[in-house]
Image 1 (cartoon, rainbow, N blue to C red):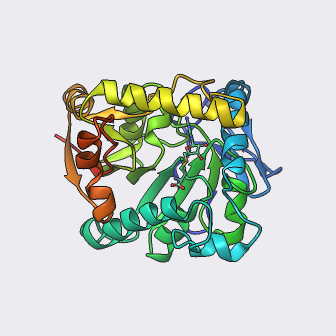
Image 2 (cartoon, protein in one colour):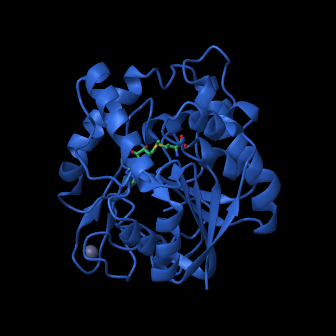
Length: 307
Ligand SMILES: C[S@@+](CC[C@H](N)C(=O)[O-])C[C@H]1O[C@@H](n2cnc3c(N)ncnc32)[C@H](O)[C@@H]1O
Ligand SMILES: [Zn+2]
């Protein structure tokens, strides 16, 4: 399936852990249930039957909002430089946050984890992180639902990727058990509709000493603050784009209590790293308190290890 790496694929439909066979047509096929998974425009289509239809309303709303927000570009150079982004881009402030998270990851986390690792970039979007991980000598695989040419896996064509791109879902990863070194959710875990299922599936594909990382999922002290954020966001989307973008019951945020509970239930421990996002960001909780507003979200890097 990949040019350099032996990815141990498994069927996302029947979940049989007996590999996928490459057919003369180029498609992959499950030897157990015979479901075929083609590669189209360089992207493996690894959603089980019926799942593309299930995600269609979510993707329609999500993509229309993202493009209306001014994401994406016609320039290959724009994608190749990410997370660095021109200062006049409408979402430069958001890319600035991604860049700081990525710097922290590169300086303080990745060097301790080894080299040449097989890493899933889950909810990879355009694949910029996979591109950067490959530059660092790792073997990423970009997974996302979206095939969009500007905001989804279609945009990864700008990298001439030597790493696989797969349309697949968090909760049915097309890999054998214990076959990967790392799993990374970058600004994506909060789209999960059930954290236990999604994290359970990520842990399934990890080798015993593998690591799971969560970046840029909003975390609150109080769940009430998270719920308020969701209500505000939905109202704003409805007003600006004509849809609340709530086709799926995504979790949308985490709280420290939820993280503790998940750790207990899943037999993992969380290590927390705090990237520095600048003074303005650091002062947001104080400002919110003074103005009696809802607490702002925190972003940290969460690293889970099995206990
Ligand atoms: C906010 S974007 C983050 C993209 C990228 N990681 C980045 O940091 O630029 C979240 C991504 O998660 C993807 N996503 C949401 N739910 C998913 C699911 N159940 N399975 C796979 N991908 C999903 C979306 O399609 C979207 O591209
Ligand atoms: Zn199968």
